[in-house]
Image 1 (cartoon, helix red, strand yellow):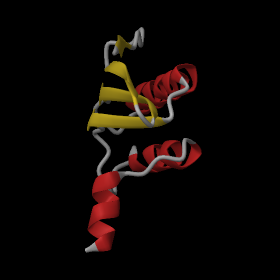
Image 2 (image 1 turned 30 degrees about the vertical axis):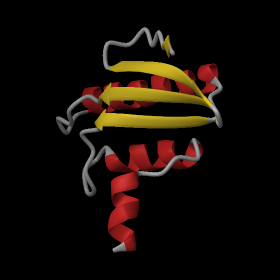
Image 3 (image 1 turned 180 degrees about the vertical axis):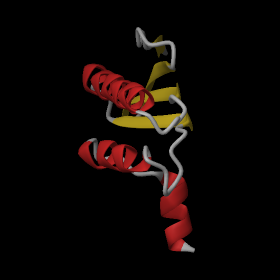
Length: 100
């Protein structure tokens, strides 16, 4: 197991070697939405840092958990959905709700 150096106080992580390839496990505390440009910019910046970590780690699988501060209907949610789609990820709690 290796610690992922994110250079970002909002992101911590480890990279684990498994029988099925490497796994990056990231924990994030995204900025809070304050309905202003500055909070949106901070949110997008954090997403960009997450993307850079995903690319740099080159892991077979990635899990990102934590507080995204971007519930369905929030101003941040569209940015999160774009990030998820661009990085071929899923929002597991939303996927779970859709299957019920």
